[in-house]
Length: 130
Image: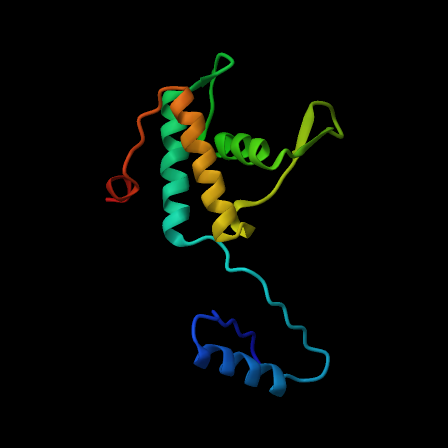
């Protein structure tokens, strides 16, 4: 049996998932969890991170979109910072890849609020992808 994933959006999907569980070999594992972020949320996130990277100077530095992702997720999740093995500090963080739809929505709303405080003009993600 190969790996299967079911999006529980209607009764047929639920029945198919239940059938798959009943037919699964001994020792298989089942996990039921909220759906992760959508592709649209991901596109919006990266468009917003690009806007922050182009428009906001943070303590005298221009940060990359990746650095802004670390900054925003750390601020939203109140993540822990620990001393690094060879000096400096490391943020123990959460991957946006594992965020649920509501968590990603919360991150995007947090970024809108932060951007409003810093005069950010947001791009349309559809225009950036074109």
